[in-house]
Image (cartoon, rainbow, N blue to C red):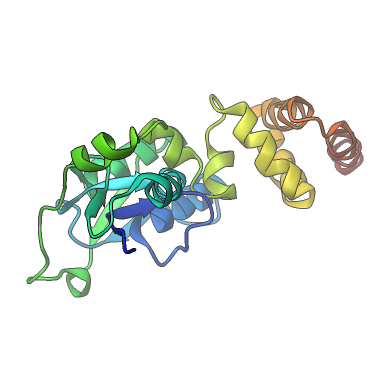
Length: 212
């Protein structure tokens, strides 16, 4: 039997910075840390695509393996058309930044398809699948740097990220503590405790205290 899935643009944790949205998130995080000037070099931000969280895509594949019909093709998509410009505005809002956008002519593609989106009605009817994650949460989860940008939300996600890299979390905590009067360090250690890694949280706290 053959069941065919037609996935549209993916986003999610660990995505390579070769892709535009993941690259924007990483650069904004670096700008926030003071490592880059507040400027992004971009191409055409007004093209639209249908973006879906990669974890939702994997879940759709699993459902199609069980419930997909032989010989059928199913769109795996959100059904929502989003421009790169709107996504970049959301990322800037999450980071608490407003940066200069510099359009680079070499990045423009005259023959590019300007609008892309699709319907997942067939997939939904066959399997009951539908996207469960809010798009803003997907943007927060694009990578360790992106997750650490947002001081105000998704503390559990922040803790899970920090738990995997306490050394990097320490550096982030020290930088945030310096700029935010200790708020960054407290957020990171609290987040680590939420996900049950008290030892790592205590290590960060002890090493941060020694560094000051």
